[in-house]
Amino acid sequence: MNTMKTHEMVGQERCSVRATKLVAQVLSLLKKHRYLKEFTLVDNGRGGVFDVMLDGRINDCGVIKPRTAVKRTDWARWEQQFIPGVGVGLLIVSTPSGIMTNGDADEKRLGGRLLAYVY
Image (cartoon, rainbow, N blue to C red; front, side, top):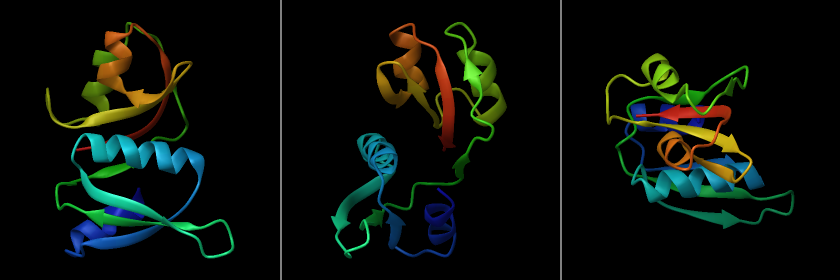
């Protein structure tokens, strides 16, 4: 998240992020919500990296540590803490049904652990 944030701040359109399954799921969520243009896996013989095409829409993003557990009724409280306004940005959360946004988790009435925020 920090790599994407710093590349956005200096106006670069492309960055490289180390490839893991979790990073792939987070990047696909960001692409789905139009924070990224595209990302592709580049195999470098050591696990690979994702080549990420930035869209210039990320104002701030970061990981949430410690990965706090959230009950299904507490989404509004955590949105107020990490997101600047209603309908702006999203929280990325790990739930028993997989990685999803706070809106999807609230819709499905699921709790989970906070991973990251972006707006």
